[in-house]
Length: 259
Image (tube, rainbow, N blue to C red; front, side):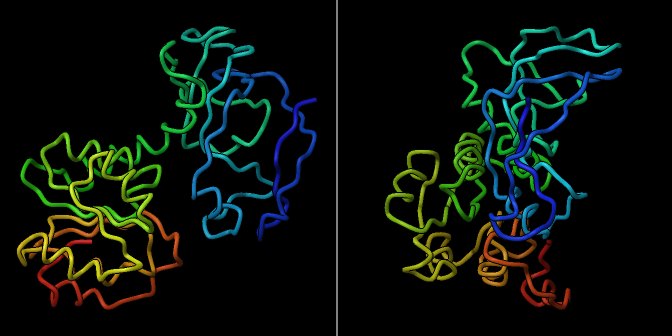
């Protein structure tokens, strides 16, 4: 029988239970998947704790690579045996599941199950950050927090290829080496040095065009101090805790900033 990790309440890791589940047959526009590899993301923690609520009981997990077992009516673009991947749809922590066909992309042979499950959500996040939230331009200096994380490793390579000077914050020398191998021009160990002062030094006092911040409470206000006039702070996560309320007038006081 198919199994899944389900949560009947929010809280610590102990709320996750390995249970039998009924999957059923795919309806119109749906596909029945056998999961091959499942991606792990920090948003899974947010779902578990209730910071980002899911209807309960819930199966966490936002991305995976899988094999198509069967398809429902009105599905013509996929067939049993196809390897596919998806992201952005809760329910990934399972051996089998149903999912709308339009959420799936076919995998080429050169991309492994593990690679596909690890890069879908992070890759789409990097795309909207770099190309749609603030569109990074050649010559921009940018600051990316958690540069050695899943999103950071993709985004820093991408930003470098766009012609940006990429500054990243990391938590250790090991992570600094990893980030430098993946596009970072400069790495700041934020536990050991003042990243605001270091950013100002690296940009000759000008500040960066954009800060991408998934850390939240620990970095939010200091990130504003890293921006040049009319710069943009992009907050896309809160791994260190929820950002406190603040007066929007602070954005004007610090240089007509955008959030």
